Length: 87
Image (spheres, rainbow, N blue to C red):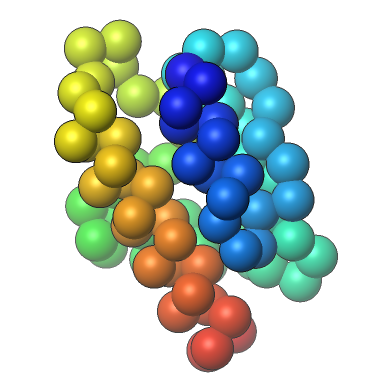
């Protein structure tokens, strides 16, 4: 959980990460539409929940492996970068 939290906090467009263990809420920077970002992530194969307009919720299974976490963080980073250039 701590590694996932740190990796998410290092992404541009992430203002906060809250939660416990692997159950995390990712607060996005002002102006980023979480629903649009969530749809882009779903299209790339990553399922996230959007509980409110500026938040993504991540709830990976406890059996998730490190490389899967790395791919998920990469997908979120790419989606945030894409969103920043094409809001």
